[in-house]
Length: 128
Image 1 (tube, rainbow, N blue to C red):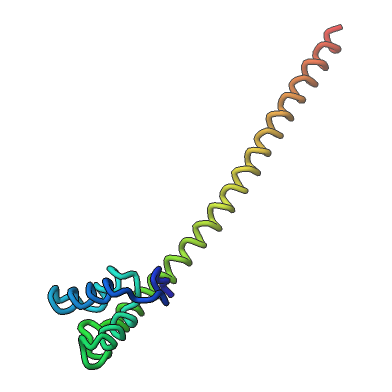
Image 2 (spheres, rainbow, N blue to C red; image 1 turned 90 degrees about the horizontal axis):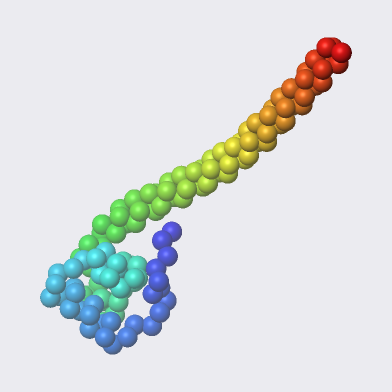
């Protein structure tokens, strides 16, 4: 669920006046106002009723679409979080794999060097 920065914060007089201006004069809906105020659309609808700007919170402009918008937003957020987790996990696995390959490459290089020294020593003893 989305977190709102101003959730549960006291409404100031200026914020209430801004709310009235946005709703009545600018014709903004509760979703647009919610973004501007960093509050939920539900909080905006209830505050509109509390301030007597509207008669009933459920009749607030754009409120009926809120459930659809929130549902879609939550679904997208959940999918996004899952993708982020999967990418993080994939990146961690990839980094571990790269580290293992690097160790293996170093081991092969050391083995090759040891074998080269062995063959050079064998050839030196064979020519004597």
